[in-house]
Length: 282
Image (cartoon, rainbow, N blue to C red; front, side, top):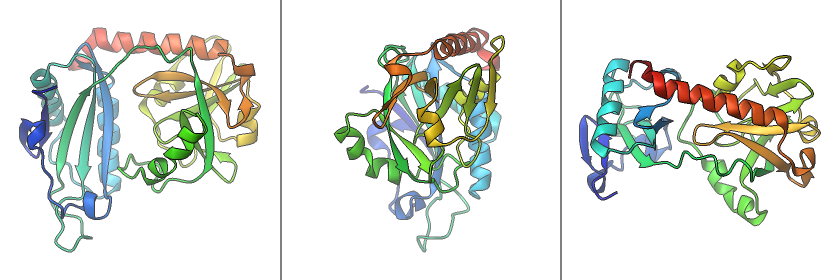
């Protein structure tokens, strides 16, 4: 992508020219938030839901976004047009800003948008995922912060176990993956944790899906219950629904993808396609 543009503080610039001063709190203290959405056929999927969360996160972290919603949507549109990438991931980043003492939040946070091509296919669905567990609770779990210290620190363990991702639990109470929410299926009920987790946008869409005689609810559960579930899957912006076939050394559903997971995946893809077709005011 030789001609890719990045948006930094009121300017679209070539990606090779992007700079951020060392005094920014994202560098000094790891302080900042972000959100991440995807585009399909040049359309940002569920953009209002992602912007809702972006502004909520900013408020909770005492950061003042430099743009109102309509302005920000316009900037997203311009970035898509300038880069001409049909299927992509767009990251919105808001930092603590330049700080003279390396601790105090600036009155003017720094804002950036980065766009990269994204494979939106469903090729990995049939392969499924293997997760390893980690006893950890994220700070400020309701906010999508830039703090991924634990996930990056423990990533060598994922590789050494030939796994795909980490599943956080707090003393046995299931939470989430670093970049995904988790669901379990027990009979005709589907559960996803409700305590101390980031409420993902894809997660919210699955909670809204309707299948006859299937109850989808927020309810906390233990790691032991999860490993005994009929089916397990995660939801994530980039891949929608992904089946989980193994957690640590325990196979889920004998390593097979379940019918409920398949049905919900189909419905979610239909919902996404509808959003693309309607454009929803974008």
